[in-house]
Length: 442
Image (cartoon, rainbow, N blue to C red; front, side, top):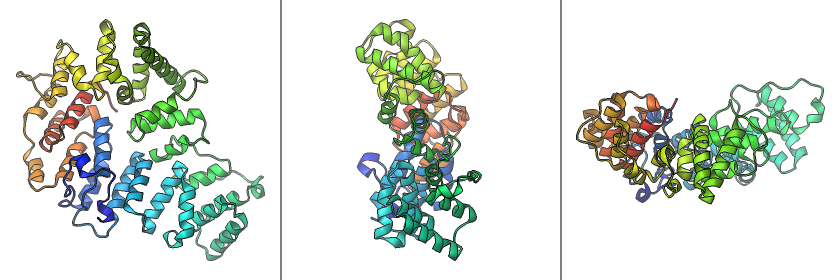
């Protein structure tokens, strides 16, 4: 298997054919991955991760071995899936300077840089960049050697002025105590981020690309920073629900307002659910659900608690609330069976969850788009891709049609759902349909 075909998910897990990408243009795939990655619908994001991590042959038009792997790694990093990108690179084998640079950058964000620094010692051909060598020497306590290497780099003129100034302060901050603070770069690298952190001028990650949020999950970050990073990554599907809950449950809220109110609301609800206290559940669920909705974490909350809520018999509107939570969880089919068919949305929620549409189509545009997606075949263009076995490209094109989330055009919703079903992604079609009805995305 070439490095381009490497993946963390085997064909038996994904159900995708090994020629998923072979018949498509690498440039088209790169463009479509960019477009499809913009969707805020959780099921679309989950499908993107599955595609990027799947074992499958590279496109035949790829120019060099490793280019398609790098494309997938870059997309994972853009989506904030740093740990998955690291694992994918490890599986494929980090054998080129280009791939090593990506692995080194990822390690700086997750706190695993010592292993990469040791790799530079063992295989110096993988990284000829002076800043990385200087940083790694200092990490191992070889400060004088790091200073010598910096002097060599300065003599050779291979450093940018900003790089030189930052590395000099990193190696001997006392010399610059009276100097003005350095300006943060507009587009920092992970190494620059860590160097600024080391000299006590830490950059806030909220305005940086999503991958930088992983730096706030390290123990050196405060709990508030960890909470906000966990929210950002969980919303993107780049952090597991259990990891999110572990951070949210680490301790009691230290203040009120903002993230603290969300933490308190979720903790109170989880306590009530663990005790199976119906009155406390009915008292705490609405607040917890509302707070999670404020930051786009309804599906994270639902995947944590939705199935368990099905075992609790609540009263009136509280039962309806619990069923909506469960509809966004893996227990969506059971939740749908308990949902009363009162409104057109209720009818379509039950239909989408089971994949069986009613005889009479709804009139509301979004509901009708979903109905048509389950009852009409793919467009001729999409069917041509399927017939040509360009399955990966077809799926990406369908995902790109949902890039506007719940604001997606009804016609594009229909085309995406019909394609998903035609290529065997029935569960994706169902969960996307449910999310389109229950969520509001931006």
